[in-house]
Image 1 (tube, rainbow, N blue to C red):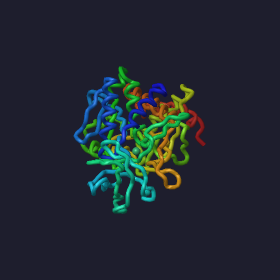
Image 2 (image 1 turned 45 degrees about the horizontal axis):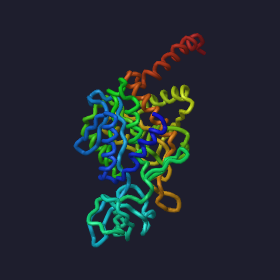
Image 3 (image 1 turned 90 degrees about the vertical axis):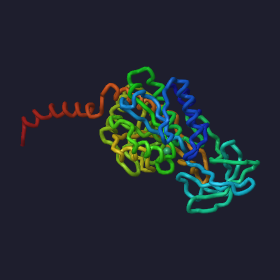
Image 4 (image 1 turned 180 degrees about the horizontal axis):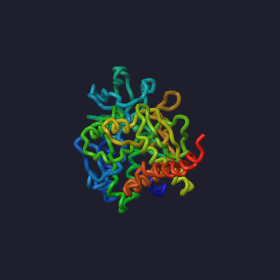
Length: 360
Ligand SMILES: [Zn+2]
């Protein structure tokens, strides 16, 4: 997929505000994208979206990304223009400054963060600037999307960039044999402990034959660098992912780096957070993870200020290329062990006679 089309897809999703449990707007946008591209969307009982392969038992690669982003859930109306809300998601308490601009939904109403009601549960008053009868969630009032010099900046790169990448892969492989074996699961309420993903993993409706690939934007931490390519995430804060699966992507990345001059990749343990891969692995799935480096993780900028997140579009493009290769390779049954195993076997058969020839 061309960079421009990929950026367009990301923009459509990033213009959709969401909070944990309130993913209606990005879900609607996803449904439209799928309709336009003649891709089948199914909603599971938990509200997660499954897109792609018509026959779930044929899935060989399942890309998982989440649609929510840290935000406020409105609990009650406290009085004229005042709502009580709790913040859902990982943002340190020092970022909650009275007067910070918010947007209340539905209605996209301008509002501001009021006093703290309960620090332990991050409960606050939200004050509206206009008359608002009811509200269900609120987000930081930040520009939703900007693209400048290859940098995508906006309220929620995490994880709408992952979701858009997964959809881009499905669009890219459309009509190819791999399309029959590749699906995307877009989950809900990830920011509050993997709600949607745990429910789906536990339900076990996805075949265990599928390689689950967790897609994320992940806090930029050494040794990875933004703009230096897609990150083969060998693990997260809680887990190490399947060695054969990460080797599988590593082999493909080496091949792509040879073939394409703009393809770059990095390989690292991204311990800044736990990703959905850990949840799937706990339910017995084979898991790999890819991510791109994220700036201003969860909108936490310098000087304890709420700022837009940002990613590098080239990194995202690399992620889409690698996933497309993965989908094709898995559909052709070029699975991970075969690739490296064959090479090791060859090396062993070359080395053995020489070792035997001269045993000290
Ligand atoms: Zn995330």
